[in-house]
Image 1 (cartoon, rainbow over the protein chains, first blue to last red):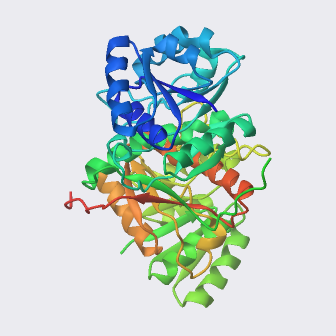
Image 2: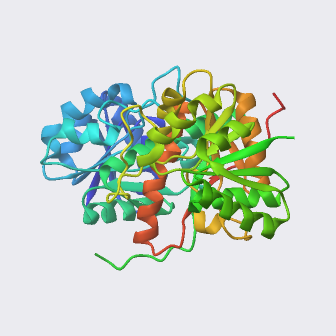
Length: 221
Length: 221
């Protein structure tokens, strides 16, 4: 039995993931810079799902959980991860950060580290296992009960950690796929700007990504 | 009536694109470092398609064409583009280069310029209109007459140039999509390493990419 903290859990993506995980039976702790806001959102989610949901400040939420999902805007990534780093030692942190730099969100602007995921690993330190995922899913679609036409590529240097995150992705009703090493996160992060461009150019309400081909699940590793 | 040079046209991707374009009725000029090899491949393709196909050295092929498609390995990109640059002034050059660095081809390794496409623009100079495309299509699938389950993201800073390339993509039997500015090419280039990883991990014979969502073609621009 694990408890999962969603840092930035009152934002659009965080709230959507929290809701899907709670509905799947997970124990969720919403984290926010504002503990009162987190508590209010938690009470509402608990009422909706019938599952126990807590709400706390970000660092407290990370400390109380066995796995941490970070869903904050790129501009808040550094301050948030620095704040929660001590509480994440020995844990898996799922970073969902896409390096969007408003107003040019349709333009790929990868950070100097190559990806937000590698930046997360540097900010959190070596005692934390960073996995990245959920870059390409439209939050407003994930917020519904409808099926979402989007694969979730999962990146990380440890296969066992990726597999743990793949199970969470499946609990959210999405197909997750091993995407390889953490540095490969650049592909999915960059693709989000392309999808935003596609949304505008082709009048799409949330374009997504599917990997095609006859995929055979790998043997458990 | 345009003639299209395929630089590196005797390689796997170049030969596949050349064959599809010739079958679609385009006049194709195969370029190779070895003019005799290009001539032999051209004769074979002409015999197969019944279309006029020429074979020349790379620079001669670029000079003779009104549009140039470059399909060389990343390691040859700099020397090839430097060689053909003078012949490309005022033309559209479609760069298909993926920055794969063997042996770690499953690892995203974008060049210092951010993408092979931006690198191509720097190497060719400002008098050339670089568009990038065809990064994610498995060459051995494109080499057949079968339909290929892969969208082609097309990147470039000029929409009219992207549209011209989208027409070529359609002639190849593929769905092409505007992917935005040339810098956005990083997304598709990086994704190729992820697809190679997926191929290995899930025993796939050429995974591809589909953009999901109800896409409405943009008004002609």
